[in-house]
Each structure stands twice: as structure tokens, then as C-alpha cells.
Figure 1 (cartoon, rainbow, N blue to C red):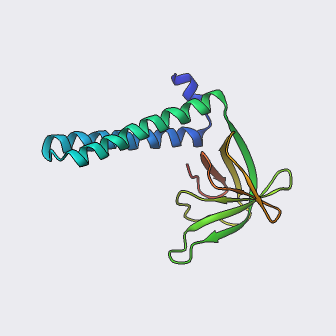
Figure 2: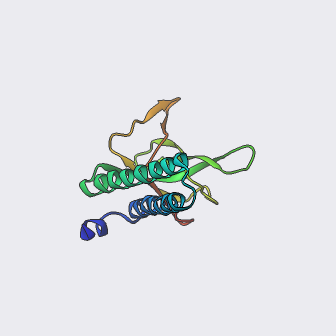
Length: 152
């Protein structure tokens, strides 16, 4: 199992470890709430988060080990920011085969510049939509930037 984990690409490893860490934190929170609060609603909600993170990390590990993901490499053409807090909402990529792909960013990217090389790890069964000659992707497994910051 450890060897299989080492063969997974680093951004996917980070995602698995983030999910396991969140589940472990929820486990500690559940145990402390059980000992001190005895509030059944908070205990059940924390236990639910723990179970969800455990299942999520196992599913991602399984997909990564059996290769149920596609690697998309591209160059950042455009960065779309939110209007209020100026966070990255979406990035537009030019892929290696000349296609334009707009990706909705689901985590926090601090600074990504136009021209940065981006690698996306996408589930093999993830739907890709087309609108006005551009492909739209609303979810991905992991995102890696080269020449900028590394995001898991």
C-alpha cells in the first residue's frame, strides 16, 4: 500500500493527505465533544465529516492507483477574479492540442499569472461541457502550477 502511494503523482498525494488530515481532525473533535459536551448533534455532525473524509480519501486513492484520471497540461491564458475579494474564480488554459479550457477553481490560488504552466488531474468520467467554442470544466482532482505556486 505504501509503494502504491509513492507511485501516485505528488498533487494527488497531497489531496489524499489533506483529506486524511481533515478526517483525523474531525475524529479528535468528535472525541473531545463526546467527552466534554455530550451534545449529540455536534457529535453526529463531526462523525459525519470524519466518515465523509475517510471515504473521500479512499476513493481518491483508489482512482489514483488504478489510473482513473486524465492529466491535462496547458498554459494559463486568462485569470478571472471574483468581484468582491479578488480571489481567483476561474482560469482559462490553452491545452497542448490547441483547445481552450476554462476551469472553475475550487481552492484558493493566491497568485497565478498569465503564461504559467498548469497541470490538471481530472477524473476520467468527469463531464466537460462546451460553450461558444470553449470547453468548460467545473471540477478536478488536483491542480499543479509550474513557474508559480504549487497548489494541491
